[in-house]
Length: 455
Image (tube, rainbow, N blue to C red):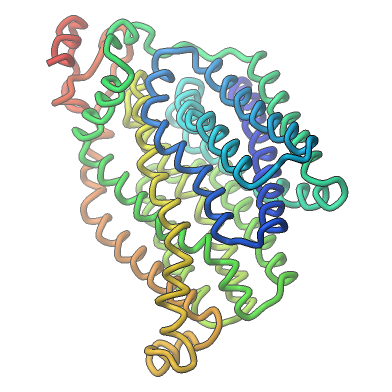
């Protein structure tokens, strides 16, 4: 636990720095261009490279020193921030340079979440994984509040350059902490059987995942959830500004951040339900209901409560989901499988970010205008005028989320219970699971495992 806490502190420091830079770069782009489209490009540059690289870096996570990989993540991201500082000092900084360095930093961060999840499994007993994941989600909540607040102060007083320097300092702190801790090696013997190329080893993770019916269904569930949640996140500001000013928006966002802290604190203390899937279903259902609440009427009180509850449920859902994967996937496969999971679950986010604006501007806002198609039907319930098309998107997203949870409850629970009931025997007794029977029957002979994997 002391080593885990030290690594967690390093991660939180890095998260605060990342929030600082993200806020500062976003403000810089808006001030210089006033373009929502260019801001969307910056967001996509942060997410898309991570999606492309995550399945491949998982192979390194399973075959290399995980502590050194995490140190490399922070070193690479710090160098990207240093490059931006140089361009800022020289007066050469522009939007396309920001997009390029954001994409490079995203390549570094592709390994961050998968390797930290694998390290958590190695350091924390299985019964305490929910609490450990909750502690990480609490750190995410802290960074979401501290980062933008500190960035706003520093940007107004000193400008973007100082924000980037503070970001570099957080990466250096993280590397110092990581250099002082020890992480036990996991499944060293399995490295002898990783004889294929990186692409072949990543494909092996896909074959393993396909054999786990419950995990595939859970991955699909979270992909849809992330798309719907992504729509809500990117459209929340237009929703509030449809009937409130910028200062009131800031108050709503701050109140929502308190919900993130409360949810992370709850799961860190509680550890989550004994059956994590019940936590996923229950708090996803809360998220869907909350989206409906926030769209019901143009009211600051309603959207504030909705923001608090939605962000309260988010860390609980994320923690329970991570616990399921950590308990189900063998430790020596976690790097590859978690990398693939990260990629597939992240893909819907840039799609939602890029699709939200055109959908609202060209479809839903005209429908909910004072002379729109739905003014005499849904307009009676949620209102008409500016921002009510966004409210309609919230209603649709909430309804789909509720239907999705109820449908998944009938299918997922049985499969995941079956897969989590398998006792995983640690190395060196078992080298690899066969692709066809992953999660069902272990192979005790290492040479047999290797030959079956190749076939």
